[in-house]
Image (cartoon, rainbow, N blue to C red):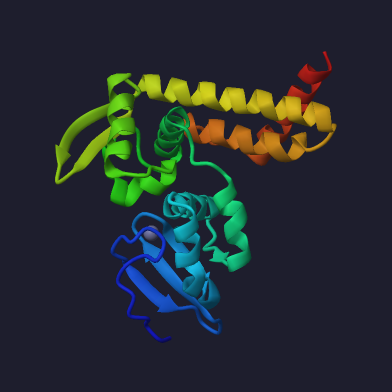
Length: 229
Ligand SMILES: [Zn+2]
């Protein structure tokens, strides 16, 4: 494996943890503290500056989109033809950014009450922040609303944990998403069996409850009956 001497992330310009040639492919694998782990094809690396010239928010949109691609635990391979659709989606609104951060904290494997050091350099892509000030504004607003608890600030990092009120807020977000999924599946007359188990798993993770496959199927079945009433 040949190490590519790239020090900064080609997407967000943060100092990289690692960059190596992707084995057997004309691509580079990056490990960025903000964007996460991802591969870019060689031709995309050469053309990235063109996308950045045409859209001043391109780096933040790509950083957020690449982070989302890793939600299933995969390390994505991003190609040039993926970029236009990634840039088409607008960045999340400030309200949505707050919801994304609370959800990420609640769904992560952190034990309840454990304080996590947050900063734009490492967590900005989760919410699609475009600046350090914008990221801190979202975090401080969530603290002010009582959705996050703050222990202290050190070296620009705000140490926070989700409060009980924050967990309730997450459940309300998921409940809304569940309702929207039900409405969508009612319109489509299909897809519920694919969407609902995901929502149920999210509820379980936030509530720190283990759900077996059998229990998940029973919940989907019961929700289906509720739908018919
Ligand atoms: Zn990056």
